[in-house]
Amino acid sequence: MRSSLHRRFTAPIAIAAIAGLTLAGCSGGPGTTTADAGAEGDGTVSVYGTISETEAELLEQSWADWETENGIDIQYEASKEFEAQISIRAQGGSAPDLAIFPQPGLMADLATRNYLKPAPQAVEDNVDEFWSADWKAYGTVDDTFYGAPLMASVKGFIWYSPAKFAEWGVDVPETWDELLEVTATIQAATGTAPWCAGFGSGEASGWPGTDWVEDLVLREAGADVYDQWVNNEIPFTDPAIASALDAVGEILLNPDYVNASLGDVTSINSTAFGDVATPVANGTCAMTHQASFFDGFITDAGGEVGPDGDVWAFLTPSNDSDGQAVTGGGEIVAAFSDDADTQAVQAYLSSDDWANSRVALGGVISANTGLDPANAQSPILQEAITILQDENTTFRFDGSDLMPGAVGSGTFWKGMTDWINGTPTDEVLTGIEAGWPSS
View 1 (spheres, rainbow, N blue to C red):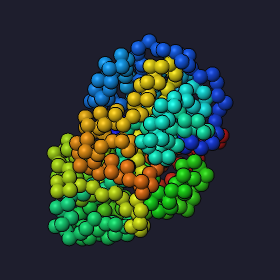
View 2: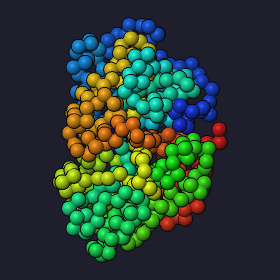
View 3: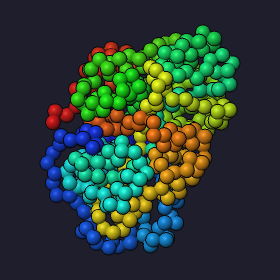
View 4: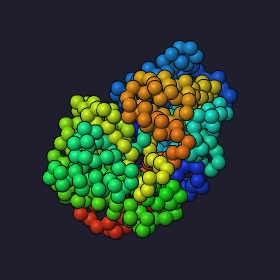
């Protein structure tokens, strides 16, 4: 099982809106802390997150040398129930020293309730040096900086076969209209559906569909509208959001275009998102939409990823070819304790040293500008790092991860599966919007 960048284990709980903006929420109770400010610590720091199995082992390996050098034992615990349990632990006085939040909104909720400690100056200095202002904002709540970014993913990649594109006489499209033209050309040449998709992910089914919509909102309507939408300053029923969903439907609701080798349109819901890797790798599916982490799934399915490999990827294009706007995911590391050991670990995890250590072990990337892209072991991950480090890239965090959980991991996920099953766009959007908390 892959990390929180790759799969989501989100309980449908209400979380606050986009970090860094004024948040509506409950009054803050006394925060839990395991140590007083300035305390030396006891030589151990507990860290709690969603990163599990092989990737948890790599995470622990990434800081092993630092632990020895600094005499601090980092004790990591993974949980599929993180999103629900972190709030319970905080309220019960048993919070970890540090938590790795896959959703900035969840971190913001706990910050507004005074459970989290502001980040020490060393962490803020690292973020000011190595991250963009957008990334810093995701760890900032009501003008107080709490958490530094950790790892990242670039969403919106379209995975395809370079050899097949050459065979069909099509080029990588530079605009959305060109993507539709490429789709039609492949369908005519092969007589089969060019696209495959899977929304299946257990209790989290539907999230791959939200990624599609987020890409189209950012690319069609722009970053300002995207920000307003994520914060519910414009509703899901706004024409800009409806237009984005309808644009996605030009592909995903067209029975001539999906679901290559897997079934009809409705089979998208019953297909596990990772299972799409096999038809892409073996060439029976021409294109699929998924984040940078899909590289690992393609490799597991026997495909070689690279510009000259079996499978390569390009970013979902905008309506025009100017600029580069991308959505993505990541994690924020925030503290419930402010003892010296906890602050030292939090500072290390925000450093370029840690980013290079972890990325060199494989499978993940970071938006840390001190990261050497050559440390990434996959060409698509190297490409993703370059995109994240490009000062001309407009980056926006995954919208559903910024929305309250009742929407982002509730009505939005459900709405996408309903939409695939035939529920009309206006009805779907009205139902998703109804999930927003009233206060």
